[in-house]
Image (cartoon, rainbow, N blue to C red; front, side, top):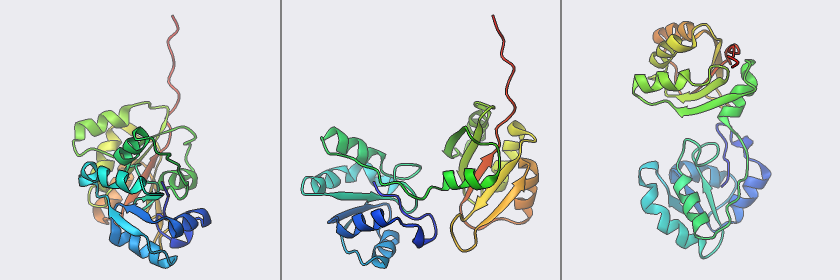
Length: 222
């Protein structure tokens, strides 16, 4: 499992480049996207497509490739199997007795937490929030003493922040847009303030949202 850049191609680690340059097969979320990365390092492996909605039916093909040698698994950005395809392939490979190793690298979650400046030493990562508002609010209400980190698409961001404000109140929020890309930008405020901003000025590109940890709750004894 090889982590790939979340924006700037220069973020690809030397180890990741070496592996992608020598393995005979690369399993990719989107072969067209990964092809750009591979060409940038002069790599020409055979590509197997692993779109999220067809992962299960591609497992056998990946296992067959593993029977003949090393395979690198990548997603479009960051680490595969984290809010991206790959989990079923990894589980099947382990069950079949293959060795699975992770080559760490760029992470939008870690980058957003580190650069937000918010209290987020302990956080819950929620991935992409569900479309159902009630389920979303239940997720946001879990563990108020922990910071929250989640991904959101640009066209849903304002509505999500507006709904989140009902649960997280005045807790500081950071929205990171296009991390590691040319037009990376950051926005800080409360969920309500940021919702109002993005309603009048919708963002472009995927966003990572960090909600600061809430105050510690009083605990009953006895």
